[in-house]
Length: 159
Image (cartoon, rainbow, N blue to C red; front, side, top):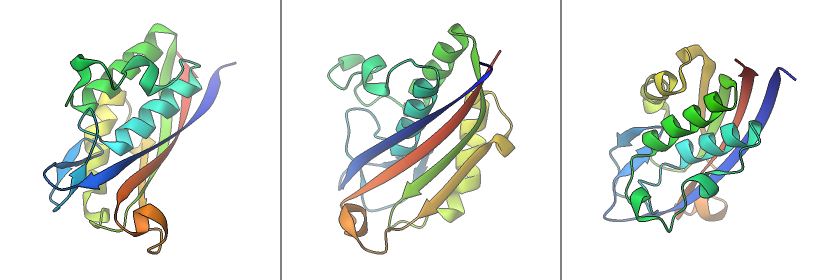
């Protein structure tokens, strides 16, 4: 098989006193995401999609949240390592499609910067990185602004 598809999902709670990192960039907001790392929910979902496509388990397996070396780590480092794992197994990224669910802040003004940040790490053109933002119409934990979730689908190709 020369192509594979993977799907990823992640969620983190919004709290005060933490920066908000999404798609590898810091976004000005009163709340940030809580997690062992920088809690970049978009990158975490993306890593899971890529790892899953290559049958390499999941982000928690490779970067466990009880390991001190990953405490407050920049998730771009985790994505870079994920790409290395794919290459070691003979795969490269074809394209990715991601959706972030958040009521606030509005993410559309930041999408191009996220794509510009993530594409070089994955060694693809920005045209191969789709990032969309949506709300949940004030429903559920994201609607109540208790957290942010992200979904990602990735296509990988044999090198």
